[in-house]
Structure formats: C-alpha cells, structure tokens
Image (cartoon, rainbow over all chains, first blue to last red; front, side, top):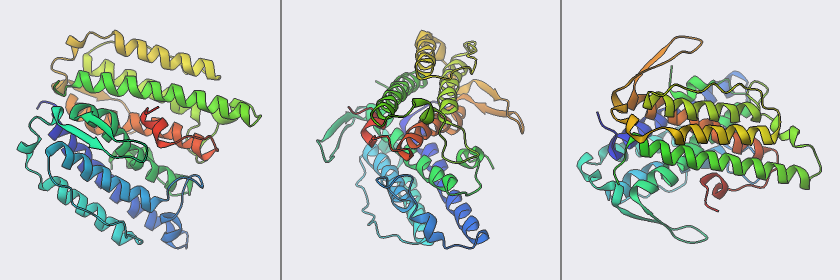
Length: 168
Length: 168
C-alpha cells in the first residue's frame, strides 16, 4: 500500500473520530462515577480564553469534513453548531464520519495540486493541496483532538495515552 | 509534488520543531514579563499524573527522530534526557532537526512496507510502515506538541492558534 491523500484521510479521520467518541464515553463514565453532571466536563476549558470541550468537538468535525471535502472537491455539508449534550456530540461525530466515508476515493486524484483557500478573520490563506494537508489541516485536526483529551485529563478523567492512540 | 513518507516527515517535523522552539521562546518572554522563573513553566503539567513540559519536549524529540529513523532504516541517535533549562531544550530540538534532515531522502523508498516494532511496557507493537506513520507516529508526535502549547496556555502564556500552526 502506498501513502496517498485518500489513505491518509481515511485512516486519520476514522481513527480519531473513533478516539473522540471513546473519550466522550469515558468522560460520561467518569462524571457518573464521581456524581456530577457531564455538562461540567462538556463546558470545561483549559484557560478562560480557550474554547470549551463542546466547541473542540465541533471543530474536530469541521476540520475533518473540511479536509476530506476540500481535498476531494466535494461540497461540504453544513453542520450547525447546536450541540449541548453528549448524545448530540456523538451524533455530530457520526455524521462527520458518514460524510467522510461517503466520498468516492477516486475524487482524491490530483488532491496534492488542488488550490485551496481558507478564509480567516485576518486574511484568506491559500494553499496547494499537499501543503494544506500537511501544514494546516492535520496539525489543526490533531490540535483539537488533543484538546479534548487534555481538558478531560485536567479534570481528573482517568485516561492514558493508549486511549488517545486508540490502542485498547 | 506527490505525497510521500519522506515529504510528510520533512514538512511535519521541520514545521513542528520550529513551532515548539517558538513556543519555548514565548514561554521565556512571558515568564520574564510576569517576573517569575521560566523553570516554573518548564516543570508545569496539566494533571498530577501527566508529564511536565520538559518531558513533553523530550518526547517530541524522541518521536521525531524515531519516526524519521525507523521509516528510513537509519540507526537512531541516543539523546539522553538530561535537559533542565530552556537553552538545553532548544538545543535538543536543534539536534533532532539536524538528525532528521541528515537522512538521505532515497532511504525512505519502500517505507510504507517496512516492518516496525515498538517496545512498550505492555507488549511490543508491530506495524507496517504506513500504519505506523498514520496510526501511531503522527498522532503521538502531535499529542506532545499540543501538550506543550496547552500547558503554556493553561499557565497564562499569551499564545493563539496561529502560533501552533506556525502562521506568523
């Protein structure tokens, strides 16, 4: 098997969406065992000016569907950021996985050279597909997956690196 | 340009080692501006049973040289975990970058199919190169880079996502 954009996204997105789903289950079990509302964890953040766990999960979804859609030239579905509960967040993850896995692998042909533009508050960022994947999309995606893990660990949920790596 | 193991490692490792170097500089500036010893940040952690910032940087180095060495079949240099100061950590990053960039690109030929074994406390993990890269090495590496950012953010260092993405 050769490394390709399709294979990178297929493995990375499916693995990490599974991991986030598992982390949310662990969060729920921890809240129940420690007798507090799961909402405390869903709204927890690592700093007052960082985003809470709910937003981290929504951004994982956005980054995931964003990179799969943009690199394959597929129109991105709009997922409104309306989740407030654990089942809703798990549903958001499931919808993201469904979209990602619905894309025809053949549409990733030539992904490395696709022109990709990301609007930001400051300026539009312009990339070739390969640079977008390696320098923007993957770091961004892993940033938010890591944030979910670290918010939970900081709040006493019993997790280890194996949970993050999906080695269970 | 086509996606390849070599290109993935070249971009990912150089970018993120630069990012960590920059985050350490921002940590030093923040400690100085707030009149406390940088050692407080270097020894900070997000949970009592998580590793402090110094160890996160050492692990970034280990993961970085590990994936470049293993996927190219190059003998890994041993870097002792002796750093206690900011200049020593920056030197560790520089040595890691130097090793990674010293590897002949041609030696990554066939990396996807290389047999890779990672000893762990529980059991030895066995991978083909492609799966090692996507399912173990990259998530692990990004985990520790994210940990450095989040430890610093949690301790009030003024950073934003752009610092993490190297967009400066």
